[in-house]
Length: 306
Image 1 (tube, one colour):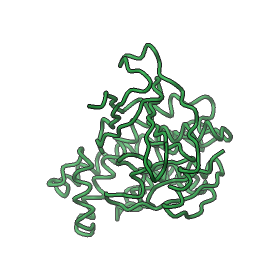
Image 2 (cartoon, helix red, strand yellow):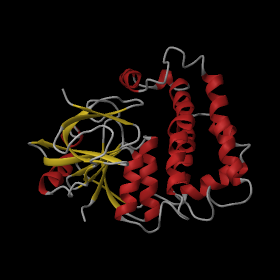
Image 3 (cartoon, helix red, strand yellow):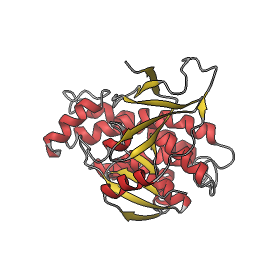
Image 4 (cartoon, helix red, strand yellow):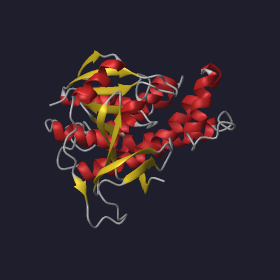
């Protein structure tokens, strides 16, 4: 089985989700550090321009979006499970809450409270990326953003105040990862995070347990070595295209795949997988040879390439 390579940068809260999965499963993985802003020339041959972080590479297979990355890691390394007690559906559904309702106000506070300290190039990059954030109003919106973040902290506290160790019982899983990463972001970027979190005793105890999971066994890797690994590997056999898919696309069609929330940069390639949970396209570059880039089906728009 191909080695796991995570393309990320350490401050990324979404990358922290996958680093925590590595810890939960006790996995060994290689870290390729990315610039915080575009362009990312060493990643482009692998993804075709996908804008979000992180990206998981396993040989010549490239997995985008933390939801799909989590499912792929579960497939490859099923124990201990990210979905204890058959919680996959609920845990994945909670991602829609945490990735937007919980993350958005935390991201707004992280930018708004630190705007004068953030390099101009990062601000300009995020203006084009975070289409849900009004950068001209960030500082005025700080009180509102605090209310929204606190409302979500209350939800997590309410899940834990009966004494359970983790959100869905006595074992940690993807539901906990989803709820934890905005708290991790707040700790690192909101100056008064300690005061903000003080009323939530059960959440803070759970936060300590989540921190104790760690990040697995990490080693650093040069970006050029990741490209070499892709070129030396063969992609996994594709899963094929559903004949009754509503889009009516056929295997081999040239398509464009684009996130439908933010970071809306299309990636084009040859359609090889299309089903209820995944879309994957084959791409070729001189740096990597053939690679297959995988996306979750939910949250992505797929159209025939012009």
